[in-house]
Length: 320
Image (cartoon, rainbow, N blue to C red):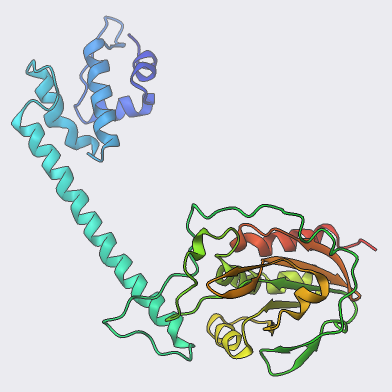
C-alpha cells in the first residue's frame, strides 16, 4: 500500500510516517519503480507508535516495543525491554509531577504572601489552615435562575439614600450626576482568615464576589471609555471590611456600605438569608441621570460579568 493509505489507516500524517522511517522504526519494502510498499505489519507498527506516544512515551522510546513485535510476540509489551520502557516513562512522569508540584507550592506561597501584603489582618500561622483562593471559582457552581425578582426595577428613579463609601465620603444615590453609573450589588467578599458562610458554594449566585470585583478593577478604564462616569460596588458589609478588600485588591473605585439594606427596601431588590445573615443577591444596575436604565439579573458567571457590562455599554453608547 502507498504511504497515504498507511497514514489514514494508522491515524497519523504522512509526515509522521516519514519521520518514523528516518528513525529506522519502519522499513517498508521497495517496488521496482522505487516506491515504498507498506504492508499490514507496517500498519500495526505505526499504530503502536501512535498509541505509545499518546501515553507519553517518546517516539524513539517505542523501539523496544516494536522489536518485541518483530520477535513474533503477539503483544508489543511482552518483552522485558518493553516493560523497562514503561518504567522509564513512569519515572519521567513522576519527575515532571514532582517538578510541577514544587512549582505549584511556590505559586501558592507567593499568592498567600501577596494576598496578605495589603491586608489589615495578619497572615495565618503555620498551624492554621491556608487561605481560601477566592479568585478561583469551582467549575460546578450552581447557576442562579431568573426568578423575576428584579424585573420591576428598570425605569425606577434612584431613592434618596446616602451611603458611606470606602474613601470616607458619603454618596447620595439620587445624586450620582449626569451620564451612566455602574452600580454592581453583591452578597459579600471573602478575605484571608475569614470563613465564608457554611454551604456558600452551594447557594446559586453566592460565590464569586472577589473575582467579580477584580473583573471591574481590570476593566475599569475600558468601562469609563465606554461611557460609564462612575463605577461603584455595594454590599451590606461595613465600610471597614470593604476598605480592607479595596486596599488588598487595589480597586480603583469606591465601595458603598448598606448594612441596613436600605436600597433593597427602597427598590424591592432581591435578598437571601444564610447563616443568620441577610444578604443582597448579585445584580448590577446601569443608572442614567438617576434613573435605572438597565438591570443585570441574575449575574453569572461573576468572574466574567464586567465583560458583560462593558459589552452592554459599548452596544448602547449612542442610545438616547
